[in-house]
Amino acid sequence: MISVDDARTQIINELTVVDTEVVSLDLAHGRVLTEDVIARRTQPPSNMSAMDGFAVKAADTQSIPAQLKIIGEAPAGGSYEGIVQPGETVRIFTGGPLPEGTDSIVIQEDTDLGEDSQQEGYVEIREVTPVGHYVRPAGLDFKAGTIGLKANRRLSARDIGLLAAMNVPWITVRRKPRIAILSTGDELVRPGEPVGPNQIISSNSLLVAALIQQAGGEAIDLGIAKDNEVSLRQMAVGAQSADMLVTLGGASVGDHDLVQSVLGKEGLSVDFWRIAMRPGKPLMSGNLNGTPMLGMPGNPVSSMICSFLFLIPAIDTLLGLPPRRPPLSEAVIAHPIKENDQREDYLRARIIGETGGLPIVEMFQKQDSSMLSRLADADCLILRAPFASPLPAQSPVEIIQLRADYPDV
Image (tube, rainbow, N blue to C red; front, side, top):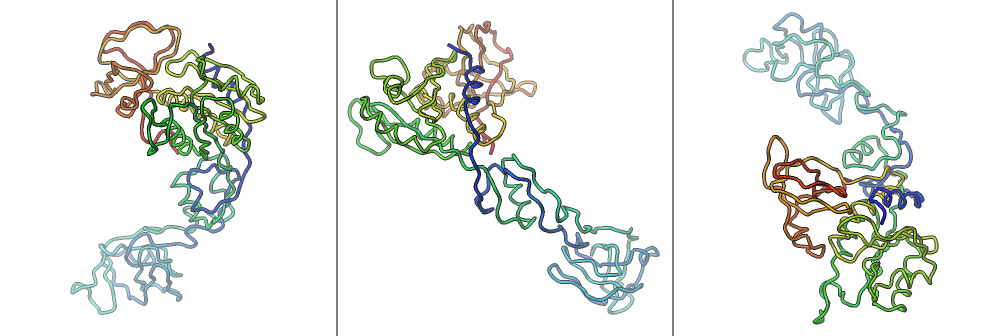
């Protein structure tokens, strides 16, 4: 058996970054930018008002109160085209461009247009206003010709907003890696299909597909191969156009675990098989006629943990990004925990409280890797290193929090 770290390194070292494509901005969220993006306009394009009020020459407000003649207005989307002279002002609204001859904004709350104003058509200024007050200068956000976003960045919703403001309708991104998923086993049927007395619903293929999509890949479901050589060989042909093949089940040592033996006849070369971890020990990595392959265990908990540790970093690598690892944080265990054996352990647990700013976690007593209900109930995984010593209650432990936003895209 090899370690988790060695397995991850071997997997990602065998991968090649996928090519690029051009997409419209409305399809760009979560995609990986491959070129620096240059702003096509200046934002704001001219000096703009940040508030509703009056555009003034600051020198006219140094003796308070001051009476200024209102000669026009500058709404957002419009402008005042004349030149404002000393003693004059223009009514202005948020986003309106400053008229020529003005250099500051007096906000509406610091003025009086009512009975206290001495003359009709004038406004009384009640506060001294410095130059540039409530003015957004041209280019405050960005200027045309400058780099707005650099390459090799996964685009967030905030990035999409910036690109739109930069007037960029199309961008070049990494193509979504195509990950083919092939489930195996006579016992499996799809959700909603008739279920025989000795069959179960295929759940981990949908779990893995969801993680692939969340990580920025495209999941291709090849279906469920039966436990015979012909079925497995025929269905594996669908992986030829994929960037990676993921098999679920059939990678262990049982008489019906055919993945390694059958696909070996079709050109599969195996880099390693079996990892010192629990759950997920019978994980296989190899290459099927030029297509990288991950042979995952059939139990759904094992599939999820192997996806966190190996598949998500592989998708990152295909996208040209640094491979992520599940984010570790510190917690406190609520009860004693026994020593560990030679395998790295990922224990399903829930958070039951807090102490000293750290979550208090409680491990589920049943850790069977087929139990999806425990997986759905879990808030975190407790990570136990190989040969870890026993721990008393209230000891610190490392956890992987199972947040809804992991992987964060």
